[in-house]
Every structure is written in structure tokens, then in C-alpha cells.
Image 1 (cartoon, rainbow, N blue to C red):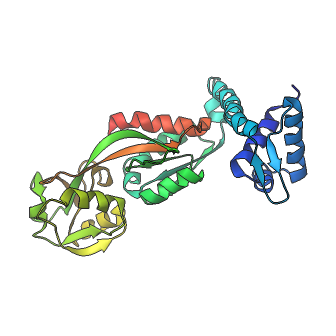
Image 2 (image 1 turned 135 degrees about the horizontal axis):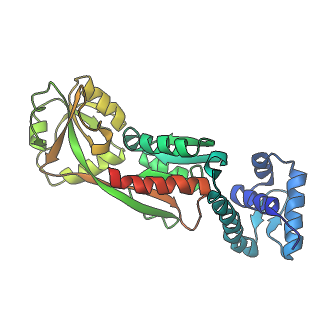
Image 3 (image 1 turned 120 degrees about the vertical axis):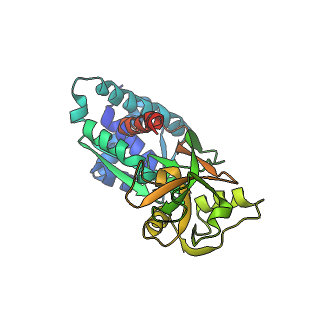
Length: 297
């Protein structure tokens, strides 16, 4: 068969983006050059991969079936290159991960630092947004995969649990509760309480846990995201409840984490990706590194 890897890359670009124009821009080719590559591939295979009109381009049934095969060919080639000595220093590309802000501060940076040390030429984009935005970014292909805490019933998304993470009470080191090892929700209700806003995934988990409880702290300050809540606690505005990984590990000059009970609240942190869509080699390397990282939490 007379076609090459460039033809496969052109085919996958059009299949993923649904447009010859968008695909040609992503590959830095003219549309005519890209069209010739697709024609060459179709001639070599003896089949029609796309239905093309003046308005849109769509994969044929055969084309849809060929997508995973073409992707596997390219991935296998790049995986083979990973085994070559010193290839890490020569690997290049870009990986995009969508991540909830509460997992960025003290979970993701260590992995990013190690990843960049091993693969210095690979660029990384982090989309730090709410759980709903993370899900959308992965579903649309704006991110290679996501790090989030809410499993999904979406048939097109796979959720891989990494760890079960408890929520803790966040207090300032000078707060009256700071010397205690654990507190209850009733204890927190006696002080100025900082809450996450309605619509937040973490707020939803907290509200679920408190649904049958008579103790519901009345908030004095409300914020949208966990990092903002932690900053408010650090400034001495009040107390709050956040996922454990959102708090600094070990001793901190201003913040204290306290075990929280009555009731206990927790969440499952995990990785999401599009079902049936193989990750690129550079994305798979980061994905695997995050999976290994869970053992060190």
C-alpha cells in the first residue's frame, strides 16, 4: 500500500476536528495538500473514508471503523520510540490536563515537576476549572484527560478512581479550635463559617452529607472555589471545610487541618478520559505518572 504516516496523521486530524480547514491549520498544511493526502490514503485502501460536501465533511461507516486502527498504528510507533535510549530528552509535543482547582495546589505540582524533569521538551497546559468544566473539556477533546472528583454516568467517559479523600476543617493556627485533633460540624457552627457557593461540586457533596443532620453552619462568607476559601481561612476570616489535598501538607505557618466528623464527608478523586479513545504517548506518560503518584499521598 502506497501511503505513509503523514497520510494517517492527516486522516486523524480531519476525523477529530471534523473540518479540512481546521485540520490543515493544526497540521500547518494547505487544504489542497491535506486533501491530496486523504485522496492518496483512500486510493491505497480502496475505500471512501469521508463523505464530503461544500458544507461539511463526515466519516463514512468504514472511516469510523478505521479511526481506532489508524490511531493505534501511530501510537504503537511512538510507544516504540519511548524505548530508545535517551529518547525522553528528544520527545516533544503538548499534553493538556483539565483539573479541579482543589487538586492543583498540593497534588498536581509534584507530578508536573517530575514530568518536566523527565521530558523537558513536552509542553503542558493545565485547565484548572470546576468539575463540570473539567468534564466538558475532556468530552469535547479540549483536554487529553481530566483529574476530578465526580464520577459520571456519561457513556462516553471513563472514570478511574485514584483515592478516597476526606474533607477536613480548615482553621487558622490562632483559632480556638486549632489545638484540637478533630472537630464536629456542631463545633464549627459556633464560629464564623466560610462556605462554598451553591453549584460547586464540593458544596453538593457537603450538602448531601448534611442532608439528615440538624447541624448546618450558617455561612458568613461565601466563595466559588476551594483555593479562595483556604485563602480566607489563612487571613483569619473564619473556618471552613475543604478536601484534605487542598490544604498544605505538614506544618504550615498559618493553617491547620483538623479531622472532621459527625458526619464524615469524603470524595473520590480520579482520572477521566474519553471512552474508546487512546491517549497520545505523551499524555499516557503523564496519566501513568498520576496513577503511580496516588501511592504517595
